[in-house]
Image 1 (cartoon, helix red, strand yellow):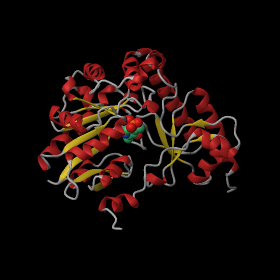
Image 2 (cartoon, protein in one colour; image 1 turned 90 degrees about the vertical axis):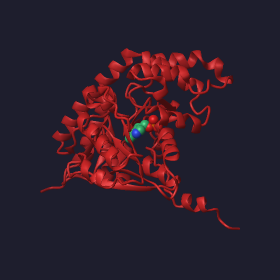
Image 3 (cartoon, helix red, strand yellow; image 1 turned 180 degrees about the horizontal axis):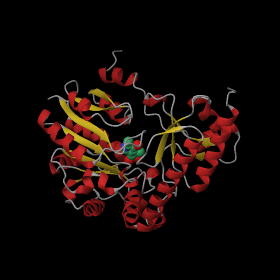
Image 4 (cartoon, protein in one colour; image 1 turned 135 degrees about the horizontal axis):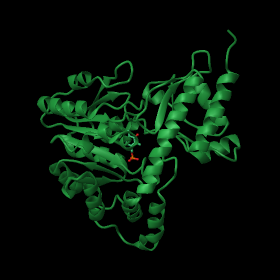
Length: 375
Ligand SMILES: *Cc1c(COP(=O)(O)O)cnc(C)c1O
């Protein structure tokens, strides 16, 4: 039997590697309590208003959702002061990334450009669509070398991905440099879109966001998600602000019911839950300062972060990153190794609630002390 060509392309594709799950680690190490600081989820859980909305809509589960999610699109458009025709809504940002690859580019002909390390879903979806991924190196300090990115853009480029704030470093370029990049991309590749992934933008000041500035370039798409600051990762809901022509193509290509009734109801409620948003921001800012300070006191190198996680490197005389990770796991604390991001000597920890942060810091202190070598 001959193998279809597409199967060959998928066969050696490494699938997206999610953070470890709590149940998996609890049973592997026989632990009663496991905390997960690995996937940048909301440290306060899900918005209480969103939880109420899900309960209230439970009886509606037999209905199909309304096609195009018009109520949610209108609410998101109002939030960003744009028209509903500029809004795309998907089953997580993941679906939006996938569909952008599919509607924008042709297999075997076009390429996408991003920085390395990158959110692995960009090249995975590109590869499934038969697109080349070009990767530009970051600067030594993990800031963005925009010229290196631009150098890879040519007339066959259809998507340029930029993650701001960046994952896993927490770095965030200012809005003006993203605006200049959009202009430069337009000059080099008139058919290309600059896709600005603002999944973590709520955790820094609004002045960092080009979307929030209102000066939206004609060739830019801004992705946001309900998975992080809104605490709804399990419901799968992402959106983007995009040129109307792109939004139109997106809605034609999207599976009609990929955003379900519960997700839509929860999102509408979460958008109204200002108290939860404020509490989330305060928790993340305070926790981020605490973790950065304490990890530095332990001798770790910590990168400045605009997001709800920290990138850090254990001191030279301590156990290596992988060993720290394994020992933390055995104590019931899941953080993230970064081998997949090409940073095997570093770790990423999500900001938790105060109790989780203290448990992590105490465990980390133990790990570093136990491995300290005598001079
Ligand atoms: C978490 C995250 C997202 C959000 O993805 P969803 O599919 O909306 O959950 C998007 N981009 C990056 C870089 C992320 O880390």
